[in-house]
Length: 217
Image 1 (cartoon, rainbow, N blue to C red):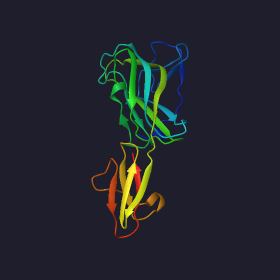
Image 2 (image 1 turned 90 degrees about the vertical axis):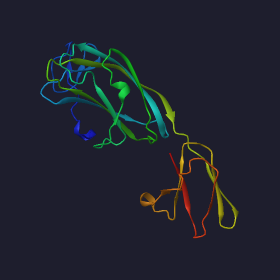
Image 3 (image 1 turned 60 degrees about the vertical axis):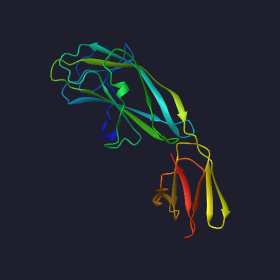
Image 4 (image 1 turned 30 degrees about the horizontal axis):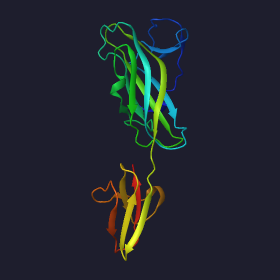
């Protein structure tokens, strides 16, 4: 499944419990999203978020109110299953177990996205399986994003102490030092410095010529 496979806007319906439907629905009276699958293997709900903070993000919190509004007799997978992806590509989805509960009430999950680039998109995906027996109905309400944690950019300094010996220092933990013999844009053959080195200072001797360094989160 890719994000581009989920294209239909939510149809509107005011009924509660919701009628059976092959897609998630928007409840116009309650102002929430609802699902009660039929005719499909599962219903899918996709949300697209964009990082407009002005810098990379390492984690954030997702919260909403979950409710079961119709009994789940025969449900093989009670509740919803949640995933996220930074690309929306097939096989890129990361499960979010904290949002998989079938118990009524608020749900909260911290998504450790490591490096969500500024201006970049992120997709949240929910799945509601079509049960073999009586179909349960679920709702999502009061969706919110909070506690956005920016990625701290390290300061890397390079000092030549003696001929052929270079010392590198950086200010933040959680980064891995990489090296390359050339700068080729997106095709640069970067490799972790043997170790890998995750804390500075690091001292190296490169008698073969110029070496380029970078820190990756």
